[in-house]
Structure formats: structure tokens, C-alpha cells
Length: 300
Image 1 (cartoon, rainbow, N blue to C red):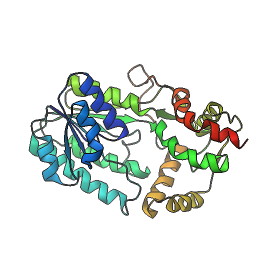
Image 2: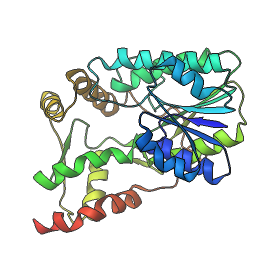
Image 3: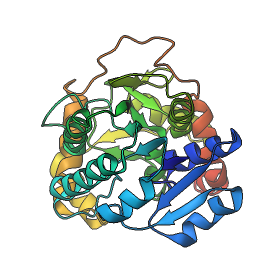
Image 4: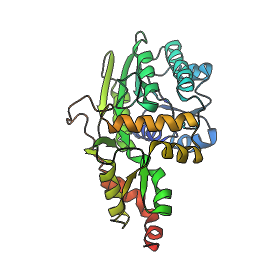
């Protein structure tokens, strides 16, 4: 049996579906039985609970040959790192008490740095915890920025005809589709062919700047004039808080943007067939924009 945390999320769901398609027995973990119900219909055994509850996780991990773990991103957390630390410690203790032999953990490019990286600093801390698990083979996946982060840009594009954020417009960064992360994670969970603590970067098909990505998105939705605008940090923080971010999370978003913009966060591996994934941003943007194309065009 393979246990999958975050099974209703973008990466976890893709992993769960691929494992089931490969004939694996899967225990799908999530907060809500209602959201897990569709995976149950596909053949997964489901287990709903709070990932901060060590007893719940220990039971969910019991008997697993391998486990997929992650720290769920939640920008509403009032003290982001403290709450992620508590969750991370719960996960690692549960893995140890259940004696899980293989773990695939979702991390991020930039998690080699202790601080100054916004949200990613929590992933550095979690990698350190996982590296100390005795007798457990741990594979850490460090993907670039998710294509799916652009979902949040659509309402602003619809309303203002521009994409605005705190990232420098012309700095190329690794970007990747979550389905490609899921594919790598599922293969690893089935193969279990590594030893020790191993880190693997996943860099997407090519690096893209925010200006490049915005231009491609604009072309896909029939708005070739669409532009990316970098706003002042304090303005972005205010916008994010108004959108539901905690003040702490808004500050961390700006810190993350600054670290990507000045090159502090960067891939540590040379691009290779092993870390280059197939889905292009053009493919993603076409699928993302299709439901919105008519309404976007109506205002032109």
C-alpha cells in the first residue's frame, strides 16, 4: 500500500490517479471525506483527518510501503512558519513511528537555503527533519514555480486587463506543470529505486520570465497586448491582505518574489533530461484560458 498526503490537491490527486491506474493499492489522505469520495470511487482507500494530528497520520501511514508527503500551502496562516513547523514535525514523527521505508516529499527549488526565501524557508526546515529519519529512504522533489499559480491572475486580468505582482518582469525562472510533478512522484513511489536522502530538481521545459508568461497567456486568450506590471512591495502586500492573505503570508510572498527576482532562489542543477519536464506553458495557458476567452474578448 502507498499512502498519499494531500490527495485532493493538484499534485497529490495526480499521483493518486496514476498509482491507481498502475494497479497500486492507495490510501488517499485529506481533510474532507466528501472531497475524497471521488478518489474512493476510483478505488482508493480514503482516510480523512487533520495532518497536524500525529496519531491520525501514524494510523494512516501504518503498513505503507511508501508515502508521499507535503506541507500544504495556506496563505491564511497567521504565523506561517510556526504552523508549518508544527505540521512538519507531526509528519516526520508519524513516518518514524509507522516505520515507513520509502518517502517522496514535495519541496521546492530554493529549499537549499535556510532563510530569506519567503514560504520556501519552511521547506528547508522540513527537508532537514526528513534527512534525519533513521532507516528511511527519502526522495525530495524540488520543482520550480507551478504554472497553476497563474489561476489566481485571471480575475485581475478580467477586471483590469493587466497582470500585476511583485516579481521582476524579465528574470527567467523555472516553471512547471503540476501534472508533470505528479508523474515523477508516482513513478518514484512505484519504483522505490533510490537509497538514502536524495534531492531531485524538476525545472519544467524551459525557464520563463513573468513578462514571457504573461505574453504567452495573452496570446492564448486573444489579448496579445496583455502586459505584466511589477507593483511596489507595499502595494502588493495590501492587495494580498485584501484578498485573504494573512499579513505574515503577504510579507512572505513579497520576500519570495524578491529572492526569485535577484537570483537568490535558483536551480542548483544544470538542465538535463532528468530534470526537464514535457508540458509547455503554451499547453497549460491554452487550457487555462479557454473557459474565459469569450468574456475576455467581449471587453476588447
